[in-house]
Length: 194
Image (cartoon, rainbow, N blue to C red; front, side, top):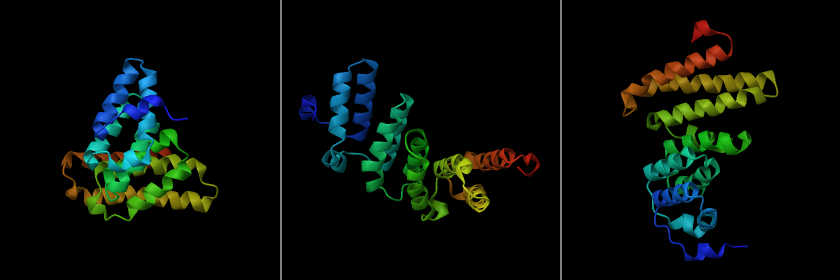
């Protein structure tokens, strides 16, 4: 049953939506919070709410600071990535937040979408969060062959990161590739390789 209060809402932008959610939660105004969520669950609203890829990213970060991973994921899935299908930041965010509120199998589509974008356009978030997602999947490999295939995917992520860091806007992120490599080999008991 729709919330009566949601009919009286107008939220012009994704950043305003995140601010309103956080404010209602902080003030323990759960009735208004539910009205906002009901309003945002309308696909018509999601199709028209204002926001650039960076604004969707920033709004989702704000929401996750208060533990609203599901809402952040929903904003990105229902609007952000639909409008910005090549945003490697948003694809990374979907994998990161999804590991906290979705089944890992559901997240594979974001990784598959990401790997079809040339690596020189990936951001550090795309590399880091795809690495984190793939590492999360390792224990669920059902066969030795599947495990080896997943490990190769992980190795390709940090190898590609090292090969393409020159395209990153912030060159200080280069060390993250080496940290990933160390974490991966350390998880396998092969610290000397990392």
